[in-house]
Length: 259
Ligand SMILES: [Zn+2]
Ligand SMILES: [Zn+2]
Image 1: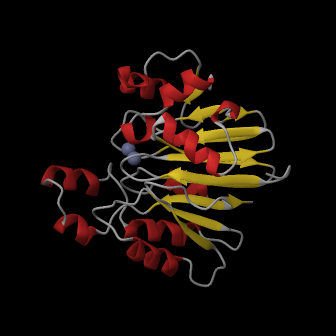
Image 2: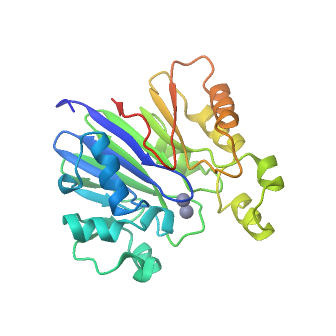
């Protein structure tokens, strides 16, 4: 990683585990740690990184697919976990005993070294879920996953990003026809569930601008979506712009992007 580069790699994404690596200058963080400790270590190695060097694990919410590896990684490598107080309570024993905790609140930014982190509230069925805006040397990246609807706040906080990690969770037709029980389908479709390809494309159409360099399509359902369907919608939203698109995967890492 060059001195003036921001490096982003989605180590895993989907309903079985989410974890994003961000590195810049001397700072290295994980956004969520929903993979096992072993998986995180192995996947970080593929991009030349080590968990020993992490400065923080920032948790967006308590759902297992975002939090299940956090406690282990924190204990094993002495990495502090940053999270909301209600998220910690909601996670209960799942995180295990934590020695290094820092609390944040949605709407209040903080720093990890010189990396600025701005958590903002998302409509999702967790205790106090957040999306994250990261700012470093004139660059801005935003994560927008795990939300059932887009709000004014989401659009306002993530506007002007150089890179977006945006949920393209499901195709509505596939969800209805798919294998999930009705109650789960209702949950996913609700305003506190997950965004469909159409809803995400609409948000992307709103957020795209000439300096948006890259968009990762994230948290894609393996049962209720096809990458081609999501890509088609995203490409439509980006028409006329040079923004590149990248897929993310449940069982392997995405490409690493440098800004
Ligand atoms: Zn999730
Ligand atoms: Zn969730």
